[in-house]
Every structure is written in C-alpha cells, then in structure tokens.
Amino acid sequence: MHRGIRIGRVVHRGLVIAKEHNHAIAHEFLQLLTPFDISFFAEHVLFLFLLANLAQSYIIIIKWANVLRKKCIITQKEMPLLCIFSSFVLLSHKKCVLLQPNLNSKTKKDMGKVILTGDRPTGKLHLGHYVGSLRRRVQLQNAGDYDRMFVFMADVQALTDNADNPEKIRQNIIEVALDYLAAGLDPEKCVLFIQSQIPELAELTTYLMNLVSVSRVQRNPTVKTEVKMRGFEGESIPLGFFCYPVSQAADITLFKATTVPAGEDQEPMLEVTRELVRRFNQVYAEVLVEPNILLPENLTARRLPGTDGKEKMSKSLGNCIYLSDTADDVWQKVRSMYTDPEHINLNDPGHVEGNAVFTYLDAFSCDEDFAAFWPEYQNLDELKDHYRRGGLGDMKCKKFLNQVLNKFLEPMRARRAEFEKDIPEIYNILKKGTEQAREVGAQTMDEVRKAMRIDYFNDTELIRQQAERFANK
Image (tube, rainbow, N blue to C red):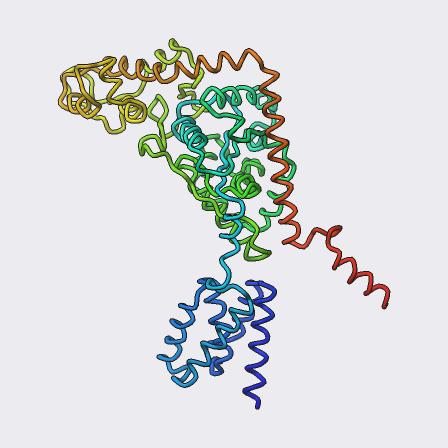
C-alpha cells in the first residue's frame, strides 16, 4: 500500500510539472531523488518523462527503460508498465512528437521563413559589408524564398561606443540607407527600419539580460575582438557595449528571424542568441525562435581582410574600400594594398596565401574579367600559378584588381547618385519600414509578456483571483 501511494504521488507530481511546463522545477525535483533511492519505478517514470520531453519521442523511453532493466533497477515484468506510465505522462503533457510538434517548430511554421540582418551606422558601408552579407541579402530578397525580410540600421548598438558623439550616428543613417538602396535592396520587398525607433527592442533586451551570465558574455570571442579593437581595458568597457550580444539577440528574436545572413565572425553572437532562446522558452514558454546563420557562399568572402592585410576590414582601422568610393579613391587604396613582403624582386616566387590582392580577386573576379581586362590569362588559377613561379609584378596584379573592383562598383555609384536627388523620400522609406517593423515587434512582445506572466492588465484571470482573495479576506 505504501508503495502504491508513493507511486501515485510521484506520478501526480510529474503530471503537475508537465502541465506547468516548468523544467526548472522538474530539475530540482529530480535532484531529490538520489542514486540510492530509486527502487520504485514510479520515480523512473518522472525521470523518463524529463528525458523524453527533451527528445520528444517514445524512442528514448524504450532506450532508457532497457538501461534501467539491464542495471537490475527494474524487472523485465515491470518494464512494460514503466513504458505505459511514461507514455501516459508524455501524452498528458501533449509533448509527444507523434501527437504535437515542438512549439518552436510550430512558431517557425506559422511565422514562415524570416530574414533579419543589419549594420551599425557609423559610416558608409564597405566591401567587407557587401561580401559578408549585403550581396547575399539582395540575392535572397530577389529569390523570394523567404516570407519576410527585415534590414535595419543598428544605431542603438552604434551608440554603445559612440555615446559622446551621437551626431556621427545621426549623419550616417542616411549614408547607410543610400548604400542599401544602391546595392539593390528594395523597400517593396524588404522592411528597412531604424533600431532606436522600436522601443520593444529595449524592453526585450532587458528581459533577456536576466537569462545570461556576465561570464558567458565575457567568453564570447567576437566581444573580445571588438573590445581589443576599440582599445577598451578592464573596467573601461561601457556596459552597453558589453551587453552587445544580448541586444543583438533581442533584434533577432523580436522579429522571430529564422535566418541571419552574416560573416563567420558573427557565429559566436548567433550562438548566444540561440542559448537565450532556449533558456527563455524553457523558463517561460516557447515563444521565441532559434535562428540559423547564413554564411557567404564564397569562403574567401566570409571574412574579407582590410587593404592593409589586417584580419578584418574595419572603418575604425581605416583599411576599407567603400561602396561609394570614386574610381580614383579605389585606385589609391588598391595601389597601397598589402601583398607578399617576400616578393621583393620581379622574379621572386610569390605567395598568394595571406596576400590581400589575391584575396580580393578570389572574392570579386570571374573568368569574364580576365577576358575583358587581362586576356593573357584565362582565369585566376593561371594568374596565381604565374605569381607563385615568379616573374609577375605586384603592380600588374593591382591594376587588374582595380579594374575588377571599379567594374563592380560603377553601377552602385550610378544608383546612389539617383537616390541622392530625393533625400526626403529616403527618410519616408525608413519611416514606413519602421512602422511596419514596430507592428511585428509589438505582437511578439505581447506574447513575451504573456509567457512571463507580466501582462497584468490583460490577465483577466489574475484580476478575478485577486478580487476574490481580497473579497474573502
């Protein structure tokens, strides 16, 4: 009789946990069951429920039931009953994959495929931005394979290390918008908006900050690189800048983005976002969506170095070629480009690895460029072979690269010149896009507040319960 009562209590507790969908309580409850106190199979029901809830299938029930049987924790006779009880708990929770899909997957299906990406408006966009994500954005926009696309100017994040110079950000909003339009982004096909004009982003950032530790943010390699690049030391790091990964997570999750086109240096940031999504959905309810990164197809373009051969093209390092640079500007920068320090004389064998000129040719040149500008070679492989053998000067390679880049940039320059003729219309485009983005963000925040149970004025059940409690006082 005692054993039956205990079975009933444990199964009842498992059902309560299932109903509440509270993994944290479930974990604490399991901690009470020491390895030396697991003789009653009802406790294994709860244990298997937690495992199966993660895997969301019956397969793991059978697997772990066999493990328990082999360890003589349960008998062969008890095993079918164990599986039945475990399945009953799963069914009561409606989490079995055979009956109901994962809510996170359902959310993705309901929302469709959503792209979100953006840039800090600290200056004009450069070739690194283009090959890192902008080129892919235009391709994705025109392909029409996604249900919605959001592209934004991250002015709030730009202010984290420019707080004393907001005018810099203010002036560059229009520069980035012009670069977007010149590169081919179409406001009829994607939503262009300004981050600071969406207050819901700040609210969601605050809530997500409660779900990540300081040490986790400190371990982020992208944050470490950015801190070093900006010369921050020790306690001089602005708190807003330090929380950059959380702010970025809010940007992505507010719009339930499924895909984020970005360079590979942003993968650590995306991983923080995925961790925060899992944590939020576990603690509250499955509202947010885990995003995937979409890397550039050209491996070389995933992390385009600066013209000085540094690890990354960056405005702050002054090693950029901008999308709006004139032909003369491009030539001045290409002419001073980093090549091979060991390739001193014409006949010296050269190295293409780590040579910025050849890295850029990998990213931008095609066989047609050789036919048009350097017919002596059929393709880049032939040019590389000659350079490695020796007998080919750096200046010839730079002149070819200059022609390739200007051919690529000229159409953008022309489109930008047209858009510059009506600047008020550019701001109107941004205003309309921001209004559209805020509608989506407000809807997500309604779901977030409800999941966190802080939608006080819309919670009629809470109001009713409190009214009854005080009426009966």
